[in-house]
Length: 86
Image (cartoon, rainbow, N blue to C red; front, side, top):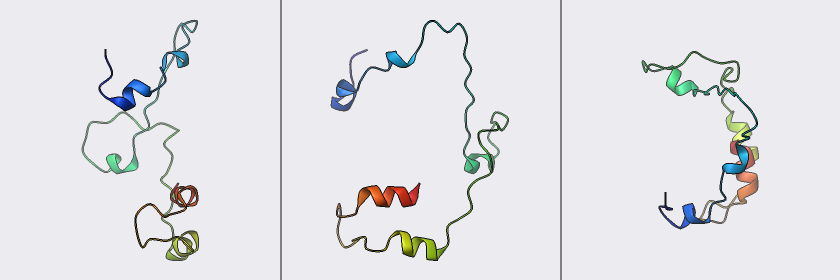
């Protein structure tokens, strides 16, 4: 299959992550809690899913975003912003 665009063409091949010497393997899908609240036919919950994290308080967000410049695009401290989100 040819790449669909520039990002696909420049991406590293994923073939190294598949170890052909392993005869069998398993995969457990992690279903987001948002989907668990629907009537969709979903696989049973796994241990990896666990309970969702508690919501952050306004005090947390005020401290985490202190000093960030939201006045225009692309001026945030991206590393610190992503750390606060995740």
